[in-house]
Image (cartoon, rainbow, N blue to C red):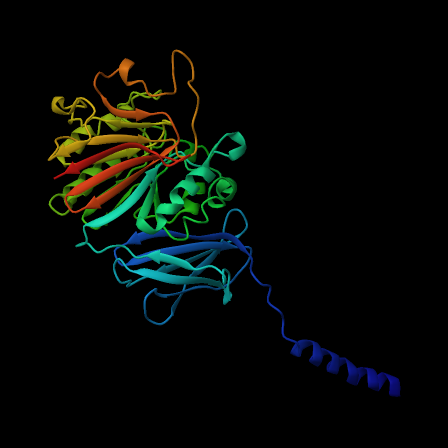
Length: 413
């Protein structure tokens, strides 16, 4: 009887000791380094991924002065089974360098790294630069060079404000499962510091496009959208497989957006995946060329695309797609130009050989189906850097392998 009583007394004591021992929370592990999205006006979105987590925060402060602030965000389970952390920073001082830290469950995940970003410039600011490049995420084992592109961009990260990714971001099928191995793992020295805006390409549409939409955070409906940066207006379009996503609806939206930009922007730049007219191995896409009258009517300056794995800058065209005669030749300087300039930058991470005799991969201006169309073409891995300074816009194309200058042009308004 005495033994039974002792047992009855001892059990609650055991339970009390067990319940009073604090549970040890599992430390989250970083699954994807931070990347910056939606650099709009005075705000910026920071995302990163962990293997687990319930609460996420960003601590941030101006690099030159001030105290640390923190903002809590949202976490969600992704379709690949990891946790996405998303924090939106608001009321940022314009064109200001910031330091920041990422925290999941109050743990600084990169304590030894100096993370930073530059906030968007104000609408009055007329000086900024960005890169544009498409067709990036070809697997290295298949001959892709996303690693070389990231290495080539790295020296310019602190001098640029953002980047445009011109579709076909992940090969071969745009699957979420391939985003880290084919892109993010190579861009750890770029994406934590430089915001990027993206558009869908045909390979991003191979899988349900939700794969793409879950990887990025973009304005409007994420398929097509616009944003202002300084005194420039940017329009991203979803050309899907060349036939466009919601074509009629998207074109009506484009008209309204271009109309609203008139008189409010010094520069208008459109970026999408598919080309219109071209001298590359790709066909001319009718739905892109059908937009040419709008480009002329609403004073579009540049149209940037990927798709063809090469570099090609066209002479200025009018609304019917005809080259404006006064620009025929190797024009590099344009004063108060007429028409719009279309540029293909589709060799960010994928390049093919000479192809077949009937369908060469290299641009072929001399034997092109469109006479006098091309101002400059080069078949090599390359990216484009655009620098805006008031009413001057300068474009420079660089080879990713050795950073030699491939092409340059300047527009004066």
